[in-house]
Amino acid sequence: MSNKRVPIKYTARDFNSIKNELLDHAKRYYPNNVKDFSDSSFASLMLDTVSYVGDVLSFYLDYNVNESLLTNATERKNVLNLAKQMGFKIPARAISYGNIDLYILVPANTAGEGPDTAYIPILEKNTTFLSSNNQQYILLEDVDFSKEGNTYVVARVDSNTGLPTSFAVKATGKVMSGVFREQIFTIGSFEKFKKISLNSTNITEIISVIDQEGHEYYEVQYLSQDVIYKEVRNTDTTSVTSILKPFPVPRRFILERTDDDTYIQFGYGSENEITTNTVVDPSQIVLSLQSKKYVTDTSFDPTNIIRTDKLGVGPSNTTIRILYLESEPDNNNAPARSITTVLQKSLRFKDRLSLSNSLVSLVTNSLEVLNEEPIIGEVDNLSTDEIRIRTLDFYASQNRAVSRQDYISLTYAMPNKFGAIKRCNIVQDQNSFKRNLNLYVISENRSGYFVQTNNIIKENLKNWLNLNRMINDTIDILDAKIVNIGINFSIICTTDANKYDVLQECYLALIAK
Image (cartoon, one colour):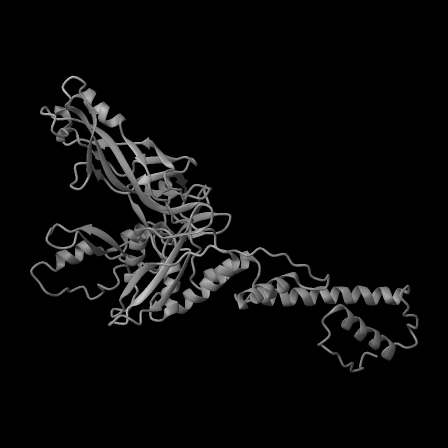
């Protein structure tokens, strides 16, 4: 029997077909050994057992193959890993943005004809506010109450003379959601690709990473990126206010996220890399250029400031301090007129030493806040299907906007620290002489309903698209028409049906209608 060539059918992969093939095999090649194949026989038990094992192995074989393909994967963990391989970064919790109205009381001048300008303060950035839902919001920039265009009204008058004693001043500021947090880590001996897990999964942005020696580590998209662009204030007031300049970053890290963890990862270069010739010191090159138009050091390549292949320098034998912006666990969108509490404030007066302490306290304690418009920007976490679709679109766009789908993909790919767009669509304006593109966007409120996107997020989106759009494309960012309609339905399927396939067919049927 050992030399017998037995034909095997590899198409049998389910329980019944495997059992039938085994039964035919036993009857054909072992007719005298096994004759009883009734349901209660031992032979039937063995056939059922082997068929069961074969069916399970066949299932897991198909399952593992499907889970290795992004278009077929169903487990969220596998979809996230496949998306990461294609360069798609899982977005952080989005930040909400909006405008707030700020009010203070300012004493009147000696003539009672207007506020005493010496007591009109500047509310400094990073002042925090609290909503009725206990969500915190941070002031994005200084608010000067003396700025032209602010509203002044009489608040209090002298009962005897009828002259104003104080004026109420109204100003407008921009806020974002979030809370600043800080963590300190002690780093031991050098470790390649050092990972540091942070204590929060709601981290939106890393503000700074600084070690005890004062070295700063910069966030990059990929560890192979050795140059970033920093904003430098432009001293020429007749031109733009800021200039982007390249800045070499031998010390760098990337921020990675999963559903359960957020961590930063450094490269595998040690501190010794800084003291060797593998890292170019730009100051030495500048000195060599003094009074000359050439450099004798032929190894210097101005397009590659860092010649190391260590993907950045990691910390060792030090303590690092990480400052980051964290979103609240709940939805950070706020309804109108819900931000009413000043949590922490810092007011600055132009000549504080010459002012009365009692009047300064009066002005400081009179600060009030209210948001007349909703604070929006956060959207629900991406579903598995949304991650799959956005990954394929992101991979196809290759960080440039040429086609219609590229613009949609880049809109969704805007870093969530600038806010997030819930849905968007782009069409060509046929009435425009330049064939302008109209980008329609929409956001959602705290209850999950569609609302119009505010101007702050639109401005952030405009700056984001300008980095990748075609030079001859002109884009208008417009509000989409809101139609809040939903359909709830229930389905009942047979026991042998795949519930996911049935649900997908129902979705397709509803869309077709």
